[in-house]
Image (cartoon, rainbow, N blue to C red; front, side, top):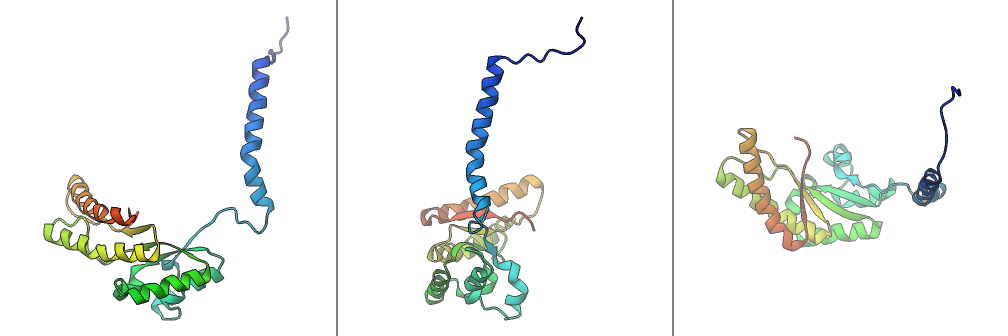
Length: 191
């Protein structure tokens, strides 16, 4: 009697193994090529303007210089924070300057993080409606800047179920407004 387990390999098992190796090689090729090319980053990432908030609030960097600062650090895309051009959302000349600076720097403008415009899930109907109205200028600004999205806060109060209903109402109204402009409304994941 043989005490050793059987290690019989069938033709089917062999073909499965060869297929897995082939698929792995095909999937790994672009990854390995990127890793071997020092000029091609493995991942493309953007710089959120909030990362430089201390310098911006201290006026050590101007909002108009954000794109070139990001480029100098190796980023090719940026995410704005509305606090750094709060009074310029409807200033077409200023937005054109932002576009020109980003273009000159070779940086893509991705989104605007919107804070301080009211709670989109406010329990008070009038306040919620005003919040939706307050965010509309940022949809326009995002469109002008060539961004794909605005990021909003869905703050609310009440029970969990009430908050869901209220936030969904404000977000629905804002997304319906933004849809014809091709602007996504995305929700901040904290705060």
